[in-house]
Image 1 (cartoon, helix red, strand yellow):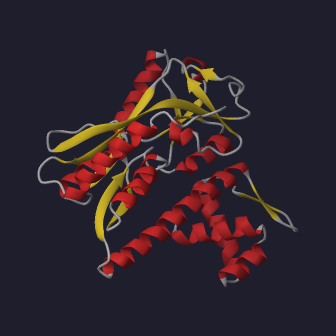
Image 2 (image 1 turned 45 degrees about the vertical axis):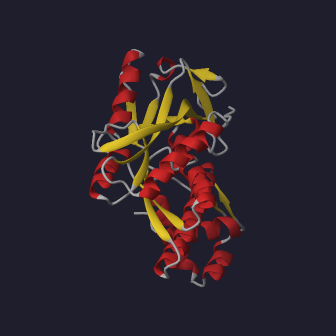
Length: 303
């Protein structure tokens, strides 16, 4: 399991490019730092660092992980600050469930706008698999949520706020990497990264159906992780992955985004409880619709 300390340790080593200097920065001995980084690599199943006697450099997977680690630590630090202010009576809370790919660009964009219009309400986001969101809303664990491929009933209200084009992420060494577009049929012999059916059932079933409509049953090499770090697996395993436009726009060097042909799209919806929803949840949903009515299709993905 990846822990908070692993992210701090990895960022220090990646920025210092040296285990000794990173250990000094973290006020710890070098051997346990080295052991923790090796454990992190084992947990991920990829090599993040190239080690030599003089310096440490990042692999392409390491570059992708560093970007994700910076984002995660920043969100965590901001959340800790908000929680402390809530504890001191300075802020109200709105709990939001955030599914993929909304965590990459959609949720941060809405939160930035919401802070401007509702500075007295702290949005506390919890990243979740899409399949976990309906029950979390019903139980009141979260007040509002952003998700894709929903299967909801009358207990929950939804509103589509964004439609994103789907791209295929491949390694720069993949045979199709020089193309601007690619069909699923051309990727029939490739291995795919895909979320598990138990946690993202609608997306998983839709992906399988798309491949079968193209004339083949996909080879799923492994189930992808929830966060953006699985782009490192595209490099490390030479697998391919379907990704929404916002997700594709954050890919690391060495990963190429190919437009899917024919075009396919993924919708993101905002969801809240139909009966007696919190006023802040309705305000969040309304703002989300407004934000992406203005910014829809502004992301540009280049190969």
